[in-house]
Amino acid sequence: MSRIALPLLSGLIGTAILVWLGTWQMQRLDWKQGILTEIETRIVGDPAPLPEPGAAEPMADRYQPVQLDGTIEPDELYVLVSQKRIGAGYRVISPFVTQDGRRILLDRGFIPVSDREAERRTGPAQVVGNLHWPDDRTSSTPQNDIAGNTWFARDVAQMAEQLDTDPLLVIARNMSPPDPGVTPLPVDTSGIPNDHLQYAITWYSLAVVWLIGTIALVWRLRQTKEG
Image (tube, rainbow, N blue to C red):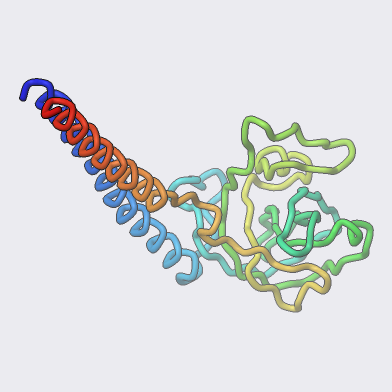
């Protein structure tokens, strides 16, 4: 019996730990889904005024809807991105001057690489969008090629310095008049990782494998003893 007790105990403890890890991931999944629901509700909520100069708080003001009347100015920055079924292209970032004289950054949306030199509309516009402080940069992201005007991350402070604006970025959802040739890439939750279900399935699967392995080992030990 002693030959069986230790493997059986180890197997049951290991299975319990793996089941607990899977359950913990399911709890994390519920937590993450609640956060994503809150963000999605905030994204489409009622517009609010821009934060006062110097008063913006990236954590508190992220995703805040805004509606702006003002003027799109001619300068553009190009942030390299890729779209499914389209391929490589750029996010177009332009300076936008509000009616009260605030000069901010406007992420107008996506253009294909071939349209980089195309002429785009400037002048009066009404923009509905969301404040955002993107987290585009990872450890493998190259440094922005400022001289060549090819950006690999939307570094708000750096873009603001380049275009002489406040360090405030609005991602356009809708624009009136429309922005021909530019496809809006509005803020959403698709880029926020939520892999907890996959992790839970992995832990539960390992628990099943561990339990089956334990049963097989105990059965084999009993057969050996009886033999």
